[in-house]
Amino acid sequence: MRTKDLIFLALVAILLASAPAWADRIKDLTTVGGVRDNHLTGFGLVVGLDGTGDDARSPAVKSALAKMLKKLGVSIDPADLKAKNVAAVLITAELPAFAKPGMALDITVSSMGNAKSLAGGTLLAAPLKGADQRTWAIAQGALTVGGFVADGASGSSSKKNHTLVGMIPGGAQVEASAPTVLPAKQIALVLKQPDFTTATRMRDAINAVKGDNAARVGDSATVVVTIPKGADVSQLISELEPIEVDPDVKAKVIIDEKTGTIVIGEAVTLRPAAITFGALTVEVGEESVVSQPDAPFGAKGATTKVVPRTKIEVKEQDNTIKMMKKAATVGDVAAALAALGAKPRDLVAILRALKAAGALRADLETL
Image (cartoon, rainbow, N blue to C red; front, side):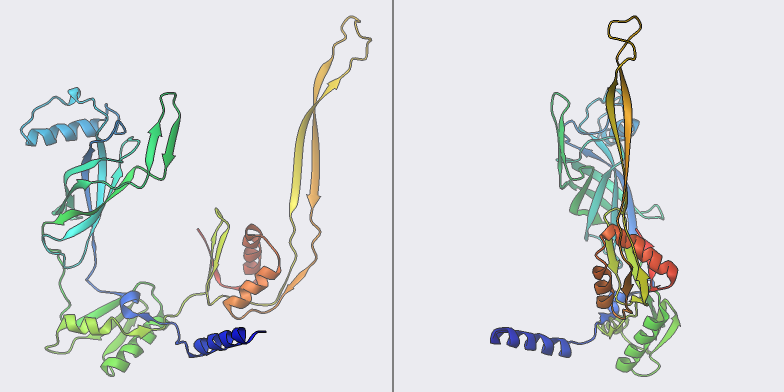
């Protein structure tokens, strides 16, 4: 091995030896109780479409467009509206905690009718309401759609990506302050993934920084921090957020059978097991053969017939039993599965069989 390679490997070994344990900030692991985003929803009209809007007979478009024009001082019979350059849409957005009037929100616009595309459209002013039916923001603007649809005169068409959902960055303006209040006596840190071990580690990390008895575990999803008398709550939360905690994780294997994707978590382990697997292939073929008549050609009633014939062939791989040794880390598990030489879709069945046999120490989750 060359000297440069030896130096490189030595540096890698030093870096790995000195690397700190994986840890996450409390800010990334939790949310502050009572401080959260609020879902907003609205109905609107997208105009300016190039013949790709809703059907001209759509009652949702006709009635909504007629009402909007009436507010603008234009009276028109909904039956007279026949253009296909308008689409009825639903608008969604997230109202952040402590949002103030004048702030801009990103919005998502989705077709709710039979429009072909929202590309090139403009959303007319539409109110965004919360679960309390109160208007919290007003949305309007030109849509950004990451795709297109093109139709030919002969009926042919070309499409790229999804064209019935668009985005408007900063497309809504907040009209009222979000109803959020800071805690007064205690701060409840709510874990995004409840776990008693993680909650205990978080309590210990907070107490190490803020002093003993500053925090306590409420349950697997909550760590409670007492607010000292006269303390600045915002300042206290900002001091808690950067504290690092090593979260505990469940042993889990995620399987997506549609794509054959398998993701193995770091806590997954294997016990020794013996495995054999093979593929059974059944091929069925159809062919047509000509059946000659028993009577001589030209004889009365003698005809040539075409008879279908089915050919079935069965193939089965003859694989030997393979031993899987105990695997204590995710790297060992990956190496043991790779040594089997199985394809991803075969590994799905193997993992399920290992789980049923008690050799796989993990939960299987199928997407």
